[in-house]
Each structure stands twice: as C-alpha cells, then as structure tokens.
Length: 243
Ligand SMILES: [Zn+2]
Image (cartoon, rainbow, N blue to C red):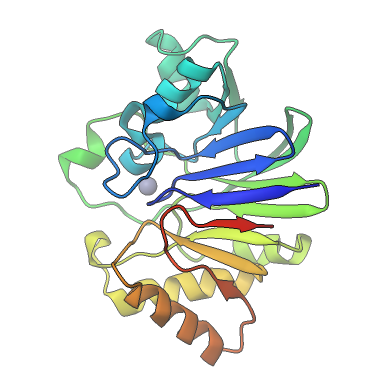
C-alpha cells in the first residue's frame, strides 16, 4: 500500500493513501507559500480539521474544499455544529469527533486525542472567528502505517502515552516562537519534548516557517544532542514524503 504526505505550508497537509485523498488543516488561499489554491483542488475524500483557529480551519478554505469536492468534513463537534447551524455544510457531510474516542472514517481507523492548546495571544484574529477549541489530535492507521497530527499543542503526558501505544511512522508537530509569547529556544524545546515522547520515525515541524530552515536545524540539532533518533523533514513547501 502506498501512503504519501505532502506539506502545503503552515499546518496544511495532503495525505494520499491508495486512491484516497485527505486534506488536513487546509489553509491554502491565504497561506502565502502554499503552492495549491482552493480552486485547484479537484478531488478529496475527507477534510480533517484539528480545531478552529485561523491557520487550521483555513478561514473558510476547509469548508470550501468540502463543498467543492463533496468530501467528508471530519472535525470537533463544536466546529461541525457551527457550520451546520449556518448551513455552510449539511448534517450528512460532517463527521463529528470528540477527544478520547475511536472511529472508522471511510474504512480507516481513527483515534482522536485531546491535545492541550498553548494559551493564545488575545488578539482579534484569534477570537473573532469560529469555535477555536477543543484542539484534537488525530492518529490515523493506513494499513500498517501510523500517522499522527497533534494540531496545535504543548508538551503533555498524553504524548508519552501515545508514543507507547503506537509505533508512529510520521508525526506532524508544531514549532512555536515569539508569536506565541515564547522564545525560539523555548519553542524548540517544547517541540523536542513532544517528539521525544512520541518517538516517530519521521517528523514534519509545522506552523513556524523561516526561509532556509534555521529553526528546523536547531530542532534537529537539539534532538540529536538528546539522542532522539528521528528524521526531521526540512520545511520545503510542497515536499512529499513516502511513509
Ligand atoms: Zn491553534
């Protein structure tokens, strides 16, 4: 079986598994580095949204992709209810998920975990849109392969527990910096703590992007110094990895 993951910038990913196409936190049109526009998306089976913050529900992009393609919209109950109440999506099109539960989505097992969100800055951009939380983490099993996406998160004992229960092939883990009120060094330490607990074979650092990857390099060096064996993906937009 063939599973590929493409990074589209920020926290946006496209996963293809056999003939299935999943989008995860697709923020495309407003995402300055994204190589793909919403209008270019011709096919999707499901759209997964970890939570309702701007870069994750994509300020409407996730809903537009579902409407354009007929894809199933998999998201926390609060978010699904919000869109259905406003007739942006139909009740048939949404798949409501809650942390701590297991599901089967389009024939594939999905576990949803509660991933604690770091405190967000009190700025209108964070507060004026759709329900922002809870923040859900997804564990997909694509045949023998395990992919984990934690949305936005900070270190928490749940990652140790997930790392013990699953042999994770690829994890998507956020990198935070001063935009979230912490230093770059602290952001790298937080990411390294989560990755060390999850023990994935490969990791895609998300959210924070800087040309030439200085922060990603610092993260990779930190992990190496700590003896954590993991391949850190460079933040090359459009990079596709086989899992
Ligand atoms: Zn968030």
